[in-house]
Image 1 (cartoon, rainbow, N blue to C red):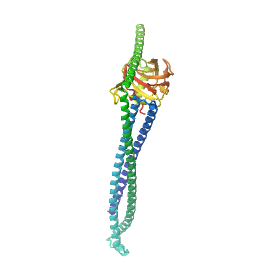
Image 2 (image 1 turned 45 degrees about the vertical axis):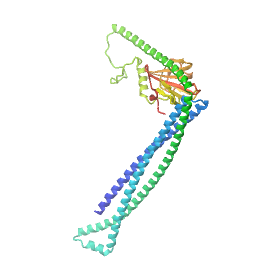
Image 3 (image 1 turned 90 degrees about the horizontal axis):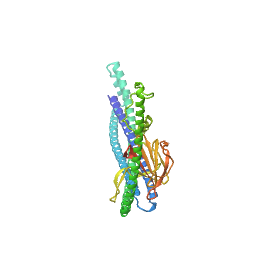
Length: 435
C-alpha cells in the first residue's frame, strides 16, 4: 500500500511538472512574438521620425507632416498596448508560478512528514531481532517470503522517499528562481512602459503645437487643397476616359468576332462543343466582363485578385500621408476627399508597377506625368512622376520600374496611387502588403 501511494504521488508530480513546462514554453513563445512586433513598430516610428525631419526642413507646417505625426502617435499607442499585453502575460505567469510554489511547498511538507513517519517506525524496530522475529513468526513459508519481500520494499521505499524529497526541493528552488526572473522582467517592462508614456505625452504636445501652426495657415492650406482637388478631378476624368476607351475597344472587338462567327456559321456545319485542350470542364464560371475578352487577360485579372493584400508597394520606401476617401484635416474646417492614396517618398525615388499588365496610356495632368496600367479588368494609375521609363502598349511585370517620383507643393517626394475596378475607384491600401 505504501509503495502504491508513492507511485501515485510520483505520477501526479511528473504530470504537474510537464504541464508547467508546457505553459512556460507557450508563454515564452507569446512574449517573443510580442517583443518582435514591438521592435517592428519601433522601427516604423524611427522611419517616420526620419521622414518627418526630411520634410520639415522647409520650416513650413504642412498637412503631410501632420499626417506623419498622427501616424507616429498611432504607432506609439500600439507600442504601449503591446507592453500592456506583455505585462498581462507576465502577471499571469507570476500568478501561476506562485501557485506552483505553494503546491510544491505543501507537497514537500507532506513528503517530509511521511518520511519522518518511516524513520520513527524504523527507529522503533531497529534491532535485527525484531526483523527476524517478524519473518519467523510467519504462519507459512509463503507468508515468510512475503514478509521478507515487504521489508526489502520498505527499505527501497524509504530510499525513494529521500530521492523524491530532493527532487521536489530542486524543483521548488527552480520555480523560485523563475519567479524572481519574471519579477525582474516585469520591472523592466514597467520601466519601458513609463518611458513610452512620457514620450507619448511629448509627441501629443508636439502634435497640438503643430495643429496650431496649421490653423494659422488655414487659408493658405485651403487654397492648396482646392488646387489639389482640381488636379485630382482632372485626373479622375482622364482615367475615366481611358477606361471607357478600353471598354469600347473591347466591345467593338467582341462584336467583330461575333459577326465573323455568325458569317462562318452560315456555310459551316455546327460543330459539337468540346472543351479546349488543356482546360478543365469543372473550372469555376466567372462572371462575364467585357474587358476580360481573352483567357490571357482573364488570367491577369484573376492573378491580380488573388494578390489582394499582398501586392508590393509602388515605391520601396514610403508613408501614406493621405488615405482613401473623405477625411478632415485636424484643427481646420477643411476636408480632403481622395480617390487614391498619397504616398510620401524621396524625390526621384523609383516608382514600380504593382502587378503585371499593359501600359494603356502615358499622359500629362497639370504638368505631372502619369502612367495608367491595365491588369485585366483592373487599372492602376501612378500620378506625379518626374520621369517615365515606359511607353503606351508596353508589357510590364510586377516590380518593374515605370518612372521616378516628382515633388509636391512643399518640395517633398510624393506620388498619388489609384486603383480602379473598371470605372469604380477602390481603396488601394487594402490591396498592398502591410509594411
